[in-house]
Image 1 (tube, one colour):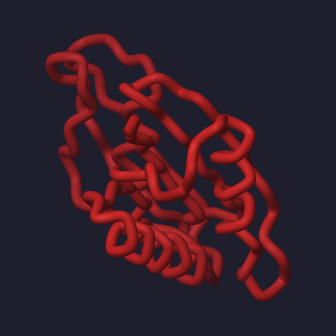
Image 2 (cartoon, one colour):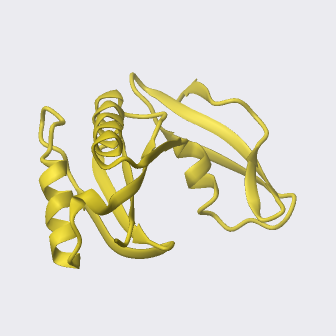
Image 3 (cartoon, helix red, strand yellow):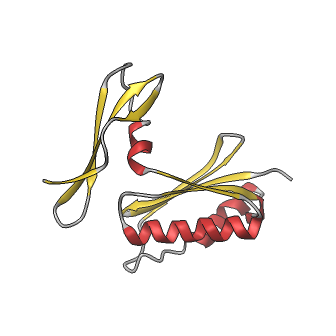
Length: 147
């Protein structure tokens, strides 16, 4: 049985998920959550699996964003990741949002990237990374600053 990898992110005001197989992107979807934050993410994942000819039980690796960001969104995706991992006998991992963003920007070796995202109550999440051996490595701790 072929295995799928599911990646979940809801650290900002949108829900995102990706389905991959052997590191190849098969499906990506982004939606705006409902007011209470409990968008029907599981049916969306089930429908995506159906479109691809897979069963949700074939999802064996699940990664969810650990933040910083929207507490409710992070909690929902972590719960879904844990439930699918237990149900499917799969692996579960978390990833940091700032690190993921930093690794999506091109920077020359040794250059510094400053990542900033919206926080709550007029605050901004901020962290600096240095490009080292093709990866963005954190050089400062995650901080909240006034904007």
